[in-house]
Image (tube, rainbow, N blue to C red):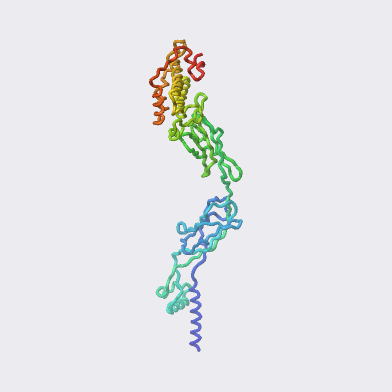
Length: 419
């Protein structure tokens, strides 16, 4: 019986020692810092949740539910979770946080410790050694026998769960950029001022003209400097927009025209369209093809204005020739008379005016040369002019006497230049 009692006591002691040695893992905080800080206010809407520990995190111990971020209205914020710098949990929201309070719940995770502990015995010899050592040592790892017969394993450290709150400041967002241009029709070389206004979700407005990026559909036609000053470089139609903090304004269409001495010139025609027909493009319907009209005003804009009047008269006669591709001889003579009238008008102001005590105003040849080449500039147009010339050949044509009546051959009011 004595032997049985001894064995029973030994069994009890052995079980107690095993239960003591079976304790593994330590639940501690190990927390270093939280971002945002608990109870923080006015947190930025683009913030991320960071939980830093003093030891590396075991990656297998985290999943998508390790950090849960909720708005005070109850909805959970979607985001991605990961490990930064080995010891920091990082939760990145998929979108900016709206204003209001938030709660953060961080589940327990395992940390990687360099410490080791005696593992649970698995053989009879290990259990016997554990029991014997526990009789003589509170910490069996200090037992000499255990150094030889006990197995060691890393200490598993589980962090404490964390719960805290913070609030995000409600920053007003840009709802629109309003672009205002006081003048949407400008003469070439002139300018105006564009103003870009940012409108925010709290109904506040702010002038952002000096900070905005200006977007012009054709920078060769119009430019805008950093202050919003618009400069028209050449005639044409452009669209202007302002961009601020990735928000585009409403588009504004601006028409830039070319004006000489009060006359607004038609826009430059598309060459393909303009040369596809005999008559070409004449959008202002004044009897002169638009490309020729523009050339005349560009060529003579710095000379006496009579140069433009005479050149336009001769150009109209050239257009009439192209209007009659199936002309007869009689029609050709009528067209020739109109063409010659312009030359007579030119000759008076370039040669004969001085004989009648008037100023010589024309000192450049207008009726021939560049103007004729420009008007009959395609093969079809050249053929019409050749036909016109051939119908006139073989006949004689008189010119009026050189007197002041020569001004009557001008199709414009010539008296304003003779007074």
